Image 1: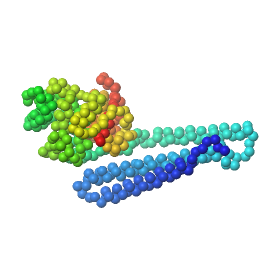
Image 2: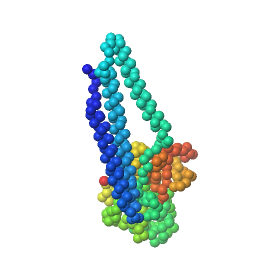
Image 3: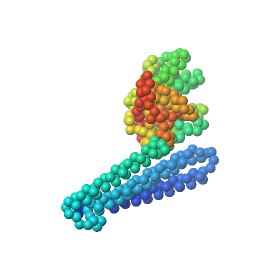
Image 4: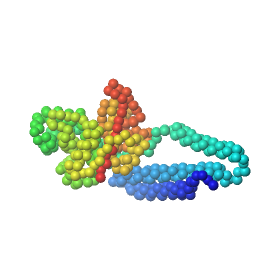
Length: 374
């Protein structure tokens, strides 16, 4: 009688169920493709882009299910064969105690060697892929992060306030800054300097407000009711600058002091700011983000900010990087070769998390904040 027992049927059934699930997911992907093919015209471009990402996701999950099923069936075969060999259920001849022990050791040795060979083959497979860092490409596409560059900017721009016309600058001063700092008195030149100081220290605030606008996409009336000003200006552009001024002066400026935010301060600011407006938000600083799981986090509706220090970011279409000392950016996706797609100064950039610099101001390092709305 065997001294150990593995329920082969249960494991094998699970493997077969995963195979069945893979087939269903592939059918779903095919159905989505048929729907997308029937939508024609520019008015369906955004819908078709979302359907394409849905189709890709179904196919990705189908491949994962099929691979898991195959692994489980391999495990069953390995254990089943080994147990039969060890327990003599394959017609082994009768042996003396010494011979039996030697035979048992031989079988075990072969078993462990087969496991070692299997592990080595897996390592060799991953080492010899064309690009061992290949991941599933993914990028969000919404009113905040406009991937075609035609309907707006790629997120907020901390420097945009400096380039507003005089009327717009004054409106924000009268209706936002003075509301939050009642004793604030600034001349026109002093107001320009105020906005310049916000630009120099405002990346974390803009990253946070990008998550707010993303959360309220398609709910313009609710946005205005919540914050007291429209989601869009008269020209149809998102009111990034108004919220930037509002968040910045809510807590971290008295009109004379300007400062950036640590990741922990950013977490507390966004949660507190939104709580005061009746919005539930959870922000957590973490290191548990990578190119391997960023697409899953974004697909689940979570928003991810990277706190990036002493590293390069690359404009789209350029191999020349901008070296930055400290910068917060929303991650909007991941490329096939494992680079992050980020929003910075209202434009799209790429960031390679595997590129590490050693500058006079320090070595490249970073952490993340995951922002979840409920």
